Amino acid sequence: MVVEVFKTNVQKEADKNYVIAVIQTQFPDYKINFDLEDCDKILRVEGIDLECDNIIDYVHCLGYTCVRLE
Image (cartoon, rainbow, N blue to C red; front, side):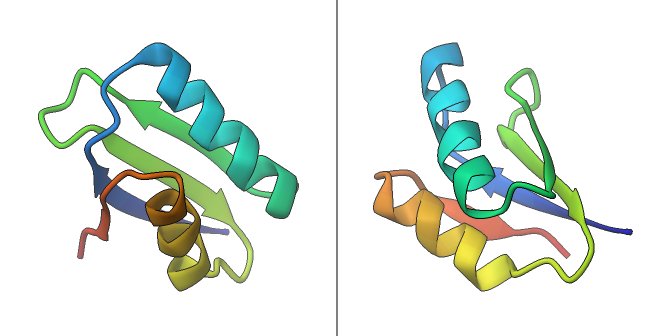
């Protein structure tokens, strides 16, 4: 299992749920959650063979920033 962490600009609970739903549709085996309390509005994705570029692209297409944290 691999965990990747991304910095986003998602602010609202409804937006968080929307982003999770879209990613979950494309990658149903990923475990996805947000930490909107964190200053970086952290998106955590856990799974096998994570496709980080695709996750970033999906979030960008929804109108949000998404940067992988090292």
